[in-house]
Length: 265
Image (cartoon, rainbow, N blue to C red; front, side, top):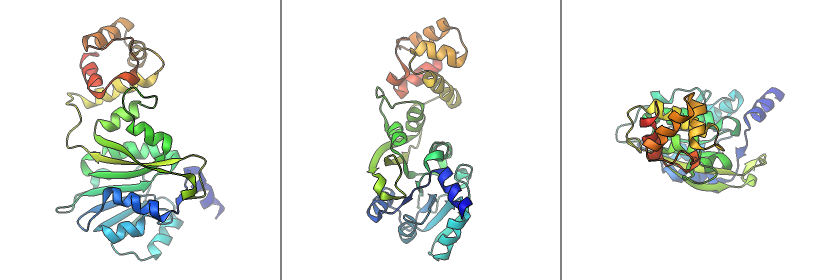
């Protein structure tokens, strides 16, 4: 039992116990009998029963085999529980039911929330909507607009592919045990196409990460360091895209990052 407990602590697992919040999370994606839902980290099943009641199929990914066994023992219809690590599970293999959607819902462990989110965005063509509980700081970064202190590469590279909104704020008392930080739920709708047209999406990612790699520096300096190009080259690329090289990355819109990517060698 101690090893299981230690694993849960290592993942930063806090189990949702507030049924009202659980219903509100499920309602964000409003599953129907035509939909397939992937639940990440069902834990003690606060969301699972409601999802199974409403969706056509629920696939629950649980890395803790003890919790997975308890969930199977409940015998919920339309529920399949997999002993799986949500960080490495292949979401790209998901297929849409006829006339339905693929939805992802989950209370993501704080320690691995970002890599799971990145895996989901990578597999976005197989997913329609997501409702994800995250540490509030991470959730706010996802939804942050340009010019805000929390706007960064995670904001840009998520909003490029998804409509993102901060849907619910969740206090520590909604969990057992209560975490030391607040949580929040983000609602993501995957866009049919990226927000801006890009000739080279991979290069766009590289440029965005370089720009935010040293966010206290001016844009040209950050690009020069992150892309290993001469400072003058970075300045010329920014100016050629109509961007003041003295600006900082957090002030640039997604469209400006796209224009910058076209100019950076």
